[in-house]
Image (cartoon, rainbow, N blue to C red; front, top):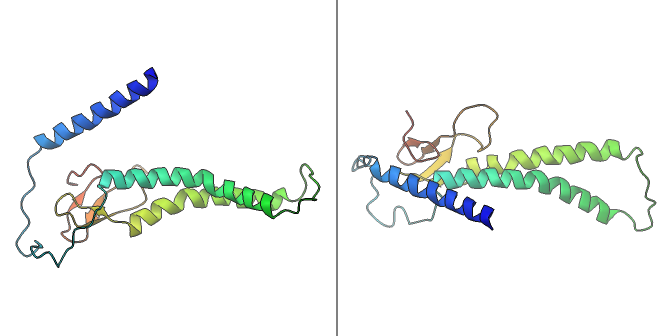
Length: 164
């Protein structure tokens, strides 16, 4: 229980420090009048994820699918096998199953993050519009993830700060 409590206190402390740091930042400038959506029928209120939560869900779903897709593949092969099939160790079937297993793991790792980046928008910190990521949440190079709003053009990082 102590380990869970320490983890909870660490997460709470990090979130409270981030809130305090955001309050200390200067407020962003107001949008020009031609970009503001003042009539309610032009942009209905839709719940969107923050860029940080959007990237986190994309990363977690990539890790979950990395293990789930191969597991479901092996489970389906086991369920499709006849019940009276002999159980043998080794054999030629491994040449068919191994590429499917590892290919399923790679496919499960890369697909959810790419789908989140391309089709699920995050909320723009400036105007609340649709902000899309420049790539999947888990990248192999050292580039940071940037979100660009399709409505106002504001570019921000995962934390919502402006990209320079």
